[in-house]
Length: 613
Image (cartoon, rainbow, N blue to C red; front, side, top):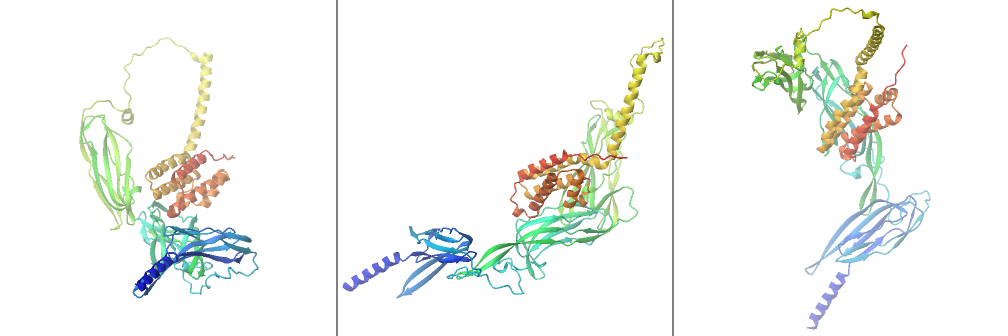
């Protein structure tokens, strides 16, 4: 009986000791030098804690942490198993301010109770010239990288700071989908980034130029980086720009290289008793992409007389709306071209409408979407008309001619016309129709009063006064007309006057993207509006625009340095958000308002007049 009591008491004693076995303590050096790196470790033994509160040390800069490592051991004695936990919280500091600094107690919760460490004093002394982070816990950078250094973007420990970044670690590649195409035949240009490091900042300082091409931008999605293997090495990739190009001339056309300022992230790696830890170390580099060329073949000669400029593969159909017709009621004859190719740039087919119709200028509606290496969809040409007479009429058939890239020959598609029976309707002939089709004005039926008397008013003083006034008015009118004619002949000036309207029309598309929360589309439309406005305002072709050209031309135009700086900053903001949306911290409504305000300010600046001899 006594032996059983002893066993029970011993079990109670062991259980009580186990309940109070958890300990929480701090380990830190007592003295370090300025610039030295040292660790502070908080060690919890005998239990697993929650809600740790770890104070930071004044006078030192926190480089890393807290990092947490957990270990567990199990012991079995006479069939009974016991478990022991331990946790270590590590913080890496760099000493900065000399003096004696106190590290406040840390706390942690274990089984509902708070455990507290003691306060610790650390003395930071001036540097003696030799780097000695801590006598207790040496923290030295890892060994120098061998010549065979090869960064692994999935492992920061293998991206050691101080190593040179060569052309195999980070590059921007411009590639074309085809090497030889015909004029107006689509070719895709792809500008792609390849990196083996993390990128913290990416800025385009000079855009590639597309001289001799019409450009259709394609949406890109860089929300999730893609993994790609090139020459046996793995890279993260991101598409910076993808567009369909339609060459406008034959010969060899070249996409020039672009320049980029990039900040990559390398790491200072430190060894600790618990393993290696890393601290980011940014590095700035400048990168220039390659250039890419494509050979453009001219379209075969002779070209058909009614060639529309379409290149691709198309079908055509015609329709008229409504199906019944009355005089003075509007109607529409439509020709729809469907297929794949340069639909956006083709000319409307010629349609011979009856002279008895009041005919208006044709309008076009374009519905396109990317389809592989080209654009597909349809374009509808609408020919509005209003019948002016009763009777049977016919809209004759016409032909749509295009160059077929598959057969490399010109194809002709017959577009059927239609016969119309026009009945009497309400209304009267339009003035537009009467002026266009009638050579003789209607005979006046009003009464005319004749006078037999003769009056030689040439001898009156008021005659000469009226004659002088009319002469002066005629001279003024001729001068104003010549000035107006000269203004209309100046295409650059007319483009400048239309610049703001064009930009506002483009910004409407950006507003639609803003309302639909389409970030990529918003920055693409905003950037396109701004580039187009500057092209019109400064009379520079879009294909030749660059930041250098814009700055030079704006200065010659007479813009202030504030205007130039705001313009370049807005271009850089939109380009950065377009190329690296995952890094964009901007606010789309703010960017929209700033862009609209900038265009309004630029529009108020007029080119100064130069004196001519």
